[in-house]
Image (cartoon, rainbow, N blue to C red; front, top):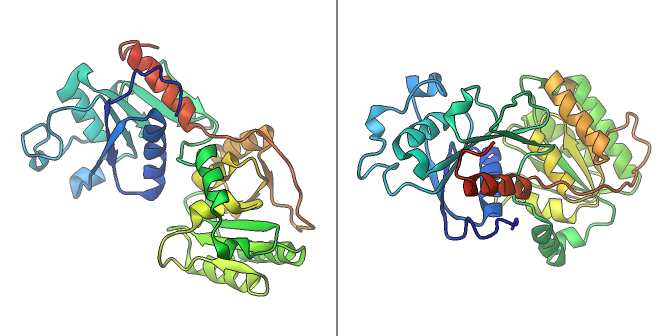
Length: 331
């Protein structure tokens, strides 16, 4: 827990959630670092209110601020949101609760900086202002203490794998990256090379991972010791983060590249076809920190390197606490 000087002890915090796992990881990470009493408010606007978010207001049928609705007094001390679908609710909360609630938006939903008391964006984002703070990586819940606790209680199936254990975190095509046939061939060759070098594998797909990626990775690693999560049961991703010796992260995911950097262990980044200036800034910053290296092609062996682990949630929490203490209007 960050040093908040007791300012937030016992405070109430609402997390306004769109239900996306990646978004919840960031808001819950910050709220947990604050040490506040968390209530998650899940929203699912539809129709025009989904189409025009974040610029439209909350639907009148939600009765925002009225007794019996999801959003009614007593108002929280702090509210966190992320994503364009949640932004109208932060705006409405700020209007109803006034200075009673300190409002925070994570990421940039492309709205006025007056929409919330504080914004957080990663450094590679261009948004700046007197109420904007930045960190190198996105917040999450993987503190050093949590990772160490999981390592001490390593699941037997992971412990049985030979070292080095390589966690393969699978992303997917998006507006910037494409997993073409050529990209999949490059990924398969790299995985085979790592396996031939003695690695075992801890493999987990994400919600965005296309079947072609799953099948490519499955075929490339079938000759080697591995654990391959098939999306049934609990996702072993937290244990993979704690127990892997080396990581292979997808360039198309800020979360799946940044979270392994909390371990201080080597993180290779696989770049599918494409990219963007925004992603390039993010990856260059991690490389400068010494956390990541672009996956060599061809891959000729597993390298080892060290760096200062990255965990931005406590840093963000400290700044929220500081501004809260100064009366919600500090710059």
